[in-house]
Every structure is written in structure tokens, then in C-alpha cells.
Image 1 (spheres, rainbow, N blue to C red):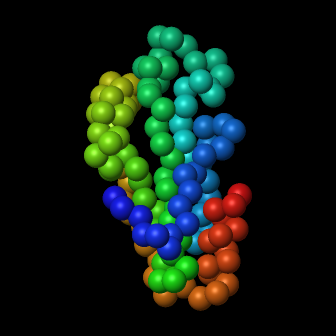
Image 2: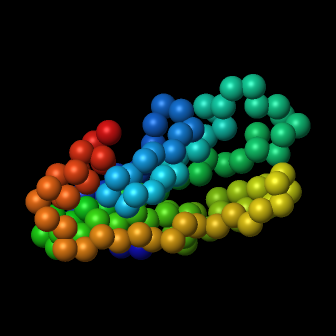
Amino acid sequence: MKFGNSEIVIEMAGEKNQKFLSGSFEAVLRGRFNTMLMRETSSNSGFSSLPVIPGIYMALDLKKRTLRAIDPLGFPENAEVLDVAGRIVKEVDGNRYGPADTMTRNNMDDTECKTALWEMYQ
């Protein structure tokens, strides 16, 4: 996935393995997941061997007035991370694990653009 020169791009990440509420998309977005930030992770737990999973990227293009939430797990360079995480999650809880669908907002007004910038700043 390529980003334009006029886009501001951030990865959702925090001090803990946390999710982020996005008012712009009215959705909860996955933040960066790192097992080193987990407390009391048993080495017997399948989750202890998960690789670092990148958080959702938010990309705001002020020229086009467009906001995108993109899952980097769908990028070719993260194919191995996706494969390993998918196998572990399936073993532990039986669910399929894959990249989230890209969300897009178009034709944003000034207030919506400012709100998106504030969410990205947080």
C-alpha cells in the first residue's frame, strides 16, 4: 500500500496493548500488540509466542479531504507476521485471523479533518 505525499500517516500504538476508539469511523481500531507489554503471560499460553503485530494506520489527506484506516497486516512485508499470528490465534481460540478491511471517509469538512487530526494526535 502506497501513501501519497500529501498524507499524514500514523500507526495506532500506545503504552499498553490497547485498542483505540475512532469517532471518525465510529469503530474500535487495533493498536500495536507486543507480548513484552503483557503482564502475567504464561509461556504455556500460545499468545506468548505472538510476534509484534502492527497497529492500524490512519492516513489523512488534507488536500483530498480523505481519511483512511488501513491494516498493515495486509501489506506484503507483513505476510510472515500475519501467517504466524494466524496460526497461533487459530490454535488458541479456533478463530481465523486476518487483516481488517480498509475504512475510508471522503469529502470531509474542516471540522471532520480537525477531529481526525486530534484523534491521530491522541
